[in-house]
Image (cartoon, rainbow, N blue to C red; front, side, top):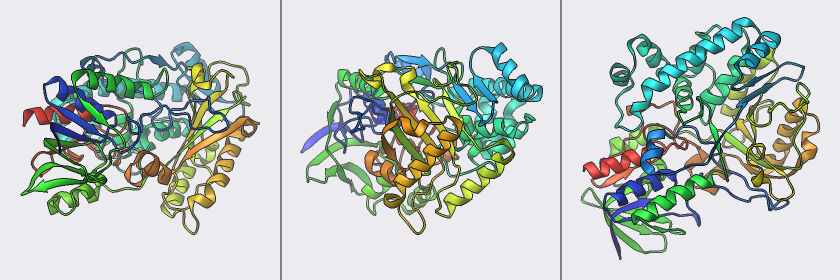
Amino acid sequence: MHRSDVLIVGGGHNGLCAATFLARAGRSVHVLERASVLGGAVRTEYPFPRAPEVAASTGSYLLGLMPPELVQKLGIQVPLMRRDPHYFLPTQGDRYLLFGSDAAEMKRQFLSFFSEQDFRAYQALQAELEMLREDTAPTWLTEPLSIEETAERYIRPTLRDTFIKLCRGSVGDYLERFDFKSDLVKAMYAVTDGFSGLAGTWDTPGTGMNFLVHNMCRLPGADGTWMVVRGGMGTVTRLLHEQARAAGATFETDAEVGSIDIESGVAKGVTLIDGRVFRAEQIIVNADPFRMSALCGDQMPAAFEEKIAGYERKGTTFKVNMALSALPTFTCLPEDRGQHRGTIHLLPEESRVLASLHESFEDIQAGRLAEFPTIEWYIHTTMDPALGGPQGRHSAALFVQWVPYEIAGSSWEKEESRYIEHLLSICDRFAPGTSDLVIDTFPLHPQKIESHFGITHGHIHHIDNGYGFADRLPYRSPIAGLYSCSAGTHPAGSVIGAAGHNAAMAVLDS
């Protein structure tokens, strides 16, 4: 029987953060990971049989939301690269927008291809988001308050009502305040920050909270944009593992927990599926809330079980990792002006874009695959060529919102290949010949996300980021000695690390 002060169930990035701070505090910490590698969905893998030298960040793919204060406390030096431009909004005609640090060029594009009204709206949106970032930042490494209490304590008086309405309301209502003329620009903002990893559309309450979360990037030099990690997202895992190990934490992979052992309402340890028993004073579960509940069997109090059940949503994200032979050429911008470095937003024509958002969401609710889902396209080898291997190939991905977890009248096994071809045909409309550049794919629809990364229902954020602050899963469970550092806790799902830090502080305060 193995004994330690703290057991951590799951070696994802939050679990590694928790292990680091607890081991530094002198606790004996042992991490149990079901997979053969650490990191959860924060990995660099070589998933392409037809291009085995090409690496990919198969799950998470950018670093944006980890608080710089946490990076400093961890003592890690993450090799970050700013994407400039960071967004590319192409059309099937000759219009486009490149969002980057060249303000004069951005204004020229807005006035040439869209309108002065859109440019003013863009400026006003960015100014307000900067203030919200600044005010909200101190809340991420503390115990959460309610949304209303957070507004009262942290948000400047002129923005308190805006903050509450954003957190409780829809991304559509928030964006409409800025009086954009272009539906295409509005849709781009909604898609990349409001819909990512969430079951909701333009007017769904909770998409506003998701939008706020995704605009909390404060990394040095980022200017609010998400950044590429050199070597892929596995670099983050490696750095965190090194810190935890140096502090004295120990690790075990291929160690799947079968149950959390609870006696008289107190967590005493865990039993692995192979029968081995581990004992500890405290247990922190890095797995999602539903997995934690299942591991407790019928020992969780009914009210808490009901709370967890209320969070349950099925994943809606389809990640198509791709190895490409060359970069695509876009009809609207054939010359290289950095458009391949940022997030490439593929959206329907402007006259149909908002209607398409509603139609696509209705499709997935009915179990159908959308004709034109919203697509974000990344090509990380434009920033980190080493990922492409010695032949200079490219590591890319399509990040698709939304798809159903289960397909009505069919299955993902039957539909996956056909739908990938369809998605590539959409790419071809913007950049003819893209389909011919694809050497291999490593697709992860929600069911594959579930099996590959061990996340219940393939939900990339564990629970919808529509739940904010104290509405999320608490770090302390009602079972004595049992804690959570899941992405379902405050502040949100994504590669943040704050949940691991905050759960560790809760253990140390116990």
